[in-house]
Image (cartoon, rainbow, N blue to C red):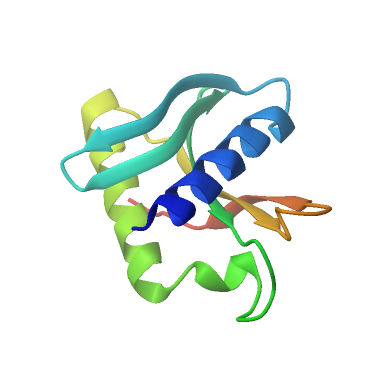
Length: 119
């Protein structure tokens, strides 16, 4: 990952934190686990929420939501299962926050429960 990509990702995560619903309690950011990194781990009531943040500086090669590949989905589901086992809960959800055109007028969208995880 280049310095520019890392910087853009960090900016996106900061924007995402500002736009999460007030009822979300942020538990951790950039949480490293056995199966990968969780951008934002939050709690929404009794539900643990993995928030994946995808940021694009422009739309030359598509939009941020298109960066969620099948491989990324599988990895997020593995992370959710890991959290479910660690925290002994049945309530884990995966939300996606997309940020397009982050360098000018960012368009921020919160896709709640975008990836279904059934255990």
